[in-house]
Amino acid sequence: MNLAVNTDRLVAELNALAAISDCPEPPPAVTRIVFTPTDRRARDYLAGLYRAAGLAVRVDAIGNVFARWEGSDPSAAVVGTGSHCDALPHAGMYDGTVGVLGGLEAIRTLKAAGFKPRRSIELVMITSEEPTRFGLGCLGSRAMVGALGDVSRLIDDAGDSLEVVRQRAGFTGSLESTKLPPGYHHAWVELHIEQGPELEAKGLPIGVVTGIAAPLQAELTVHGEGGHAGAVLMPRRHDALNAAAEMIGAIERLATTSPSPDLVATVGRLDVHPGAANSIPSRVKFSLDLRDIDGANRDRVFASIEQELTVIANRRDVSWVKSINNADPPAPADPLVISAIESACQELGHAYQSMPSRAYHDSLFMARIAPMGMIFIPCRAGVSHRPDEYSSPEQLTVGVEVLAQTLANLSA
Ligand code: GLV
Ligand code: MN
Ligand code: MN
Image 1 (tube, rainbow, N blue to C red):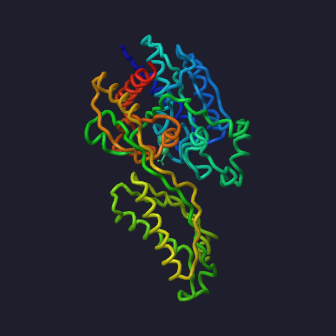
Image 2: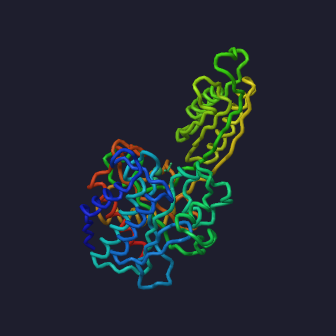
């Protein structure tokens, strides 16, 4: 099969999508938060491209957009691919979008090569992989696999619930209806940038993902005692921010000394109340993002963090509470999909290595209902979640070729 990827078209579409952004800076800086008017415009842009490619479009109640290329056996379990197009504040233009527009380009490439799938191939643009708005990532994929849980806890910074916001954005119907039936997929494969430095450092064009690390996301709140910044002498203070600062230092130390080198801990958000220069902080809320390829080690480190926070809080006479948004187990990739990707690389003559995914992806959840695999391409200096995130046209092309051949292998 002659796979002639139209790289110029793909790059032009990535640029056009990047221009649909709420970031105050121009592309490649991108901000695209779920269910905003900008997110709606991005969805409309993608749906137009899907229809132009001859794909049948359907949108579910949480806004997952499915684009289907019907196979010669429409009743056979489908081969799914896709990723997300939301972008966290001040992000780059390749995270997620490469799996969506690259997935579309893979389908167009297969069509142009005269390939006729037996199983239908379905491309999905999955709603809100990033946790930006509701504090929980992978909303669309969790919904598809029935793992969204109680949605009443999902409230944005404006105090609006997911239910209200999604319906206001035009996505109605019961969330229950988004769940895919058992056996729906024969296989699921996601193309994504690596978001780490390994492939580039080794000069390899493809990573074949063996499994996805286990993420835990929590909000921790420290309650101290506020007061006048001039009048309350230091021995009488119970400053919530100073306590939080010590706690954050302890989190870094526990993560750095963890037995697993893959464990990472990030505190990326800090809300200080009342947030005035001449007022002692009485309440501090901070986020914790904790991950490891070894899920049990992640849980042990979280338990040590909890112990340490209690020690610090007791010494400073403040209190703390946790609210866990999610604590998901890791997901191994399936040998069926791994071998389809490896065969594709061999058929096309592209070198590859096996590697874990330290970032999480919608595929973490798709693995609960489908044999799952992921294809990584390098990104410059391993940089991601930043505007200077970059994969070259050549790297994109190889990724799309491997995805196209993998889809062909799985759908035959
Ligand atoms: C996904 O964006 C992640 O934070 O791993
Ligand atoms: Mn991301
Ligand atoms: Mn992503």
